[in-house]
Length: 417
Image (cartoon, rainbow, N blue to C red; front, side, top):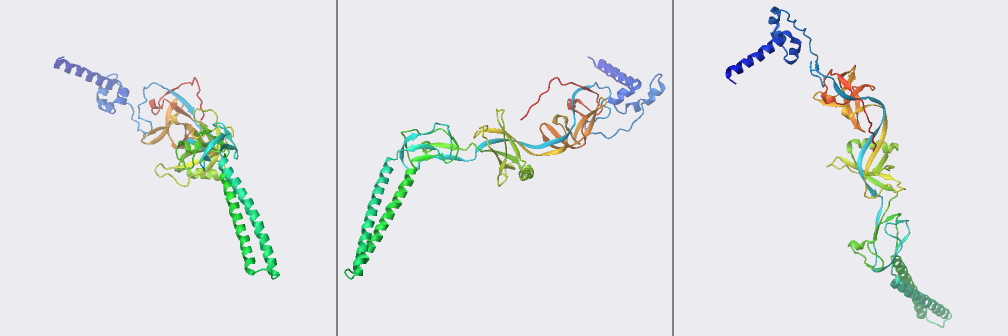
């Protein structure tokens, strides 16, 4: 295209724009503010040219508003929701780990061979149940030997006591010596000492005999036995076979999780009031367990700003399993009068948070103050009273005064943790 043709095309476009500004000033003004003033003199002398539109003083923009931008815009399809007002629980959601209240590793205190295992792997056991019997024939033989020595000591003691009685009688009648009487009393004391030593040895051996029978110190579930009958177990063995089996307490049981330090005060108040209900749902499971907060750690983790909490559950039906990951929901209290909207309804701008309220088919921006968020909803502290209709989907296409076309929901999706 030649330079002349380009210049001619540009002149035609400018002329068309000028004519549009003269005969349709309201439309051009929305795009090029101030154009009506520049073409006022031309309209005054041209026949049929409209008068300049009256000036209106623009109001200060609110969040989501652009002056005159909604003129001629088509309606926007949106979904809406009603602002709710009423009681709402204060909850904390976290991920926790199931931990046994007690865990005991069964180890031997002596070197011996396993004679018999009385329970299968994974069995539920009660405190005091016999789990493992070790070969105790050697210690039983030593106990019999000590018992025989004690019988001998008793006989020796009786003999020395008789000798002491005779020596004392002879000395009293002048037929014996003081030295003989004293020597027999010494023999009695020595016999008593030997008897006491052997009795102590017997008690010690009976204690050692009890080590050959391993019993369950707690009620819980035993794991897999690492060694079977016929194997030799040794005291002080730190290898994998050093632990014969492990028992974990499953009822009651802990679920440990972390909470932000910002809610520590609310948690302590709930514990003091006895209202710290905790619901734990194992990941991938449908059943839940309900318990209460039992332990607060004594320090806050400075690196994460969180504190460790342990909730206790009766777990009589074994819903919770040690080491399991759980979704934890703590209900601290129920606020009686709360205004809330779906989180998707809350928008942000440089002037703060706002929502679009639908009034007479038009979208009106409303500045709001947002508190906490819970269950997919924002708690509104100021700006809404409840009952208003707010845009929950499609708000990104709206501006102040946009006409809206409300879409109907075809299906409802509901979920619960």
